[in-house]
Image (cartoon, rainbow, N blue to C red):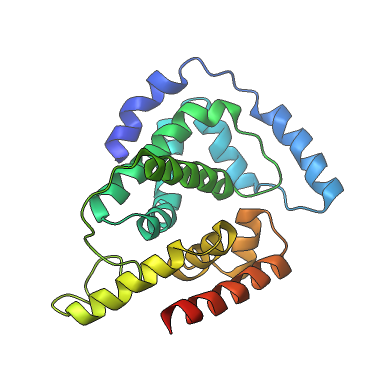
Length: 212
């Protein structure tokens, strides 16, 4: 994927105007006025360089965020190969869309997460399914290898999580399968921490009821 990112940067971003500094200044004022954290200076520099077609900047962004985005996608699809394909699609879409990126006082990962969520949603709407390969709670299938009972239990977890409300499902996946902290989930979703905690509590109750 790193080679793929490098090979497509120039074609996708060659004609993009570099206007990020002015946008960053405006977004910083908005973030200060609303009390939200502005994008970090280091991340802003990576985005500025990525917008100008800097391959190394894209590799840095990819290496920093691929594991998190892959875990999110893997938690929502049935097999590893599809998860890898969709995560690659997320970064290719980011390449095409970086010209429209606007700092709204949230981390770059929040923007990438939105692309990932929409990519997975589109995949599910398309109706294409590979055979189920590995269950949600054990993404790589190691713990349940050779144990049909454990695999069945984890498949039940996948189905139970999928049956949650959209917001509850996103919170549970980001918190427990991606491994983000509650404050990180809050920033990613643009929700107050109390709202995230409430969604998590209701989701746990719903899962206990479904899996009882």
